Image (tube, rainbow, N blue to C red; front, side, top):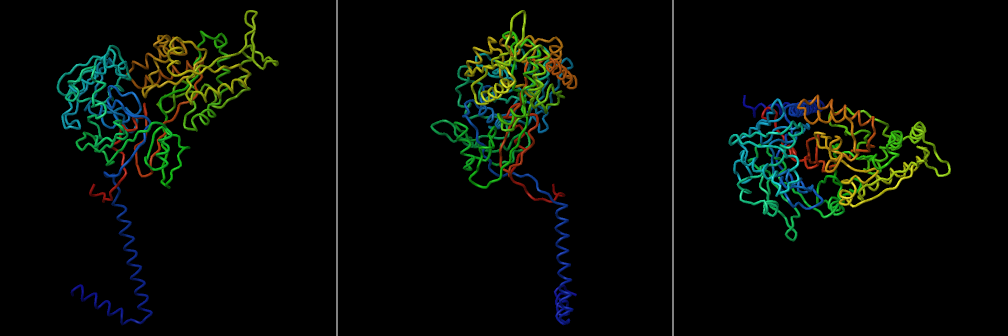
Length: 568
């Protein structure tokens, strides 16, 4: 029987039924039809999925204008942000916070930690489709090491010898083991065929500093200029990229003269996202949902004691009391709007090192007073300050704080001053322009206490900040700290290629510093990134600097496609 004939007979049968029977039949047919649709939808859900696909436009606002989109010269945040998208390095930061090969096919470290053998991938090309080889790597490193070029990275490459073993193989030879050296290999590689004829004198003035050609996931589509100065870079995916192809079709970086203009642009919808921005200032004109992503950066803010300049600070009871008196949580709330991690030791949380707290993150003025009394100090009821008799002389507990006159440091210093004065300590705050603070205060060590921030890097190399050999300029041991056990631990942490041994050494160092109290550790600021809900990103794990948020930009996406799983 033909299908049409069968359907006609079925309809005729239904039509000839009594009204009540016909109603029941149609209800049953409807139930069967709906059930069938439900089964199909349920089955479709089980065998289908949404997968990221190329599409969308994302615009990020950055304060500042890039001058050197060149990994050899990049200094500002704007320079580094654009460079991260356009250039590729031998290694890169992965989404789980580890360093993995990028241009390199492999990185092999010798048993003595002195030789890093790098074998390059042979499928890597620059944006102009020229192949990337060992000669490009050597050219880049040689220019970093050239004193005439004055690269900000030069100190990291001092004493490193490079051997080109073939078109796709090199050796980096160190004078002594240095575990964090693997971080150096993330630097972007310049194309020698573009830069090769540029002299050291011409290097900072080349047009390729603003119109770069790299081997990264994005390349320049065009540059929007305002009076000859770039106001926006419009980037598109580099289709011949050696890694995962980028999925966001257009990535725009727009530059602003100051923070107020960037906030205004976000609120007007001109930009979609921004890093290092105060979320409390964001009141978008449109009801466009956005989210805030944060992660801890390897930076610490602390008050460092110079015991050579202050007799009272040589008293460990004073240092302990000043430490216990401060409320770290209040500092984070007031100074960082809550976007920070309170610290009581030299190592920030979240970098694989077990951090033992030396004191509570909240203050206790009563505990601080008890510590001073135990140390032989007495409170002068008339003056409201603490005093102690030493060699028939009465010493008053007073300190000065030297710091930069930027808003963050000024507000932090004010809170510290208020707290210590409540304790009964006479406090003077000295504020300096950053250049004056460096030249006239830090370098000659002319301060009693120094409110200062340190950038440790992802590898947590604390050697230059705490080893006794770094007490004098140009070393950065601004606490003038000297401890044999701590020195040995710092040396081990710097030279050991065994990660477990490095972490144990860092923990031993932290324990010594916690016991000696050469500084009061305050907080570690968080990296704050605001972006639309529609943009899916990878986790910000293990960031050393904020530009590394783009280290796995190719995995970000805005659009998806619906496909059946068996077709993937």
